[in-house]
Length: 97
Length: 482
Ligand SMILES: [Zn+2]
Image 1 (cartoon, rainbow over the protein chains, first blue to last red):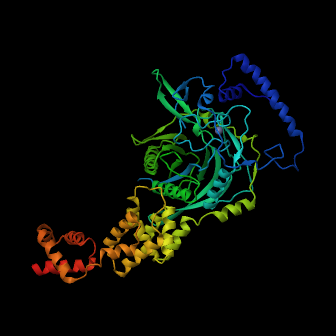
Image 2: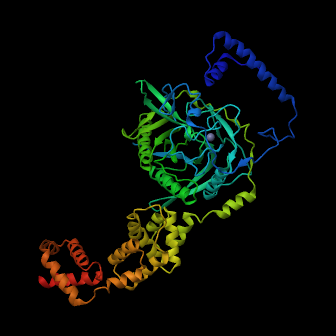
Image 3: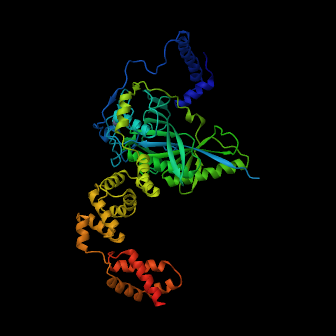
């Protein structure tokens, strides 16, 4: 399975990665190999196995609706690049929400 | 020749659920008046290595909503990651539900001008809310975005309708009725002004007779039902004009600008909707047992539609009933008044108009209604017997609110209704004498003059006169004067 440059560019854009031409070419090869490894799954006979979205034998892990404590504000803001008025300050973004 | 068009509207409603804690962590969910970033922990801050745990009450609220919307509740549900990069999303993904939501295939009946439209409910699913972004000019004068993480991870339910809505009025009716239902079953405050209820619309306009295609416009940022109606009306006009000119409708997201009264395109790159959903590996799936669904169903209150149908059957006017069932505490109260012996028709109409006026005048609006329902029933009985006039009943009610005294005590203290002809006659003559303009108006055929003169008599008698006796008396006097 091989992937082309535009697929690499698309994945890079989604991940907000800026890649050099060398990196794009190298990743094209590496991503192709990763996908090829997954291709091995297609050789298995799964006809009698129902699909699942989980790989661990757990279900219904829920908690009671009880409020516990939160972090102090300065701890929350500790990793923020910049802080203003008790909020995390980031470069202006277009409001698209 | 002009082409006829038809409009296809589907609504996506986000509802903040009423829980004590957030969706996947123990942070308190009542952050509304909190300082920014004080209801935040490593889980809702999206720190690496943390483990979310599902809030059971949020799941129950979603199932309650699904049941109230006539949905099927599948036995198996799971959460998925919806990936996108935006600063309101701490993890760069939102935990949501993709292909196996908690509720599917429901319906919701909406009334507009007496006609009922059945709107299909595609699904109701559960997800987490995002952080709040504000766009400001920062202290240093530079433009910036500020992030308050308090809302991040709050439980958020999304109700997706089928595209069964055809007019802005239907969309507004759907929103208003849904808000009342959510409050009725207690799953949300559903206050639009607080952002607890947010409605986005998908809308497209098609030439009549042609098949409906895939292209639709998503409209956002409506902060009230009125804005919802206005935004949809604008889109119908805009899309129809494009069709008329032979221009295609582009698939896009548009934001409603309330002050300008227009929708504007929100340019987003085409990859914006490449969400790359995949099953959330940190959350085991949910097996929703039939016992759980049955227990939730059994504990649901009787729904507004059922209560309304009962009241209408018992003779209450439809319009007043529709008004009443917007408010569950008042509906419960009315049912108790009826239980105490009042007729449904009288109780509903009087409570919606007169009682609610007096109730709204109370300063402490959050408190329970202080008058026992049986007292209101006995006041209504006195009114039905003619012992108190309608006007006086309102005053007696105000006094009941103010003093806590019983209806009969107040009525007795006020003395009997004035029906002695001589006393009334004197008052009527006095009023006629003092209001020559109204008398002239009556002669000129203005029917409202009678109302005015009656009002004056009622004011002087403090509502203790029998209205129909007063009306007859005034007419007789006026006609005798000619
Ligand atoms: Zn938290």
